[in-house]
Length: 357
Ligand code: ADP
Ligand code: MG
Image (tube, rainbow, N blue to C red):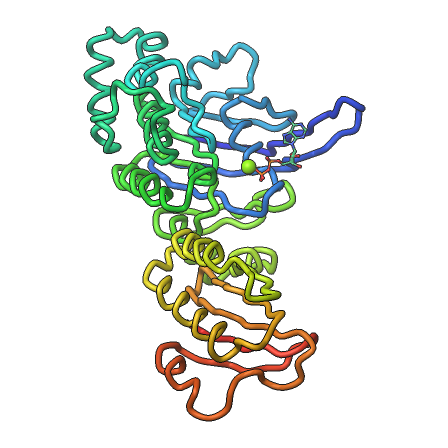
């Protein structure tokens, strides 16, 4: 359905310097595929999506859609706009139009659908994304997750053959990521062709038929989710997919704002889907900081999560210490019984107590 050959994109800055963002991108995308594009930021993922739908015309190579070269002179971009929907990080809804009007806008103008028919279909689509009751409100009264679901419904209203998603959940509060991903999961199940730039690794692993790992302006490695996440061939791919998410708190005294740290930790847990561990983390952190390590300040507390292996740990690091700050004897038994493991180990700068949850 889409065939990309030696695609390149070079930007020329106002001062004449050039930056080549896409070097030589090649891929074939079949109808019904769900492809997640992952990779470090700045590697050209957005530029690739914008090139594919000609929002940012490429500087070299070819893009074929349904057997036609869309970069050829004389190709009508209107045709492409109908075949290809796009969902942006920041929703891009029309703020002065109601939710319903946002959805009927393009079908009535571009597809020349009668108003009544467009409205009927818009309501069906709103129902599909769980927002039938919001038809008559303005986008400003919606949450981020609701706005993004409207944006998806708006895109579906054009009956595109493929929808390109550019980090559709990155601008959302973590509590709202799930509602958008579940709509996207449903679309994937229904067989819609989707190209999704995302940082949601578990989602990518679950829904995708293929993963493109972008790095240094090329598709550096591609394969099934199993190949990319479990048996990556190249070391940069491996490092990226095994990366660790961290939240760090430097606690220098008991005037530290523990309540907002707790809020941040809970957000982190929602974001990485650690729901069940959130209370345990709070519980262990509190007991450690106010009982076993209460006299140790400053102390650095680090919450880490390895998405792919689902390993979560709380580290308590004491700079300059040469021995474990933990009390000896049975004092820690309560914590040990609740967690997977407590590791006490020297580091290059001091001593660390690592609690695996
Ligand atoms: P990603 O989506 O992977 O984070 P982008 O495609 O947004 O990466 O950007 C890749 C690189 O291209 C970045 O270094 C960015 O600064 C540069 N870039 C993107 N758009 C432009 C532009 N319009 N002009 C100049 N440089 C750009
Ligand atoms: Mg981007």
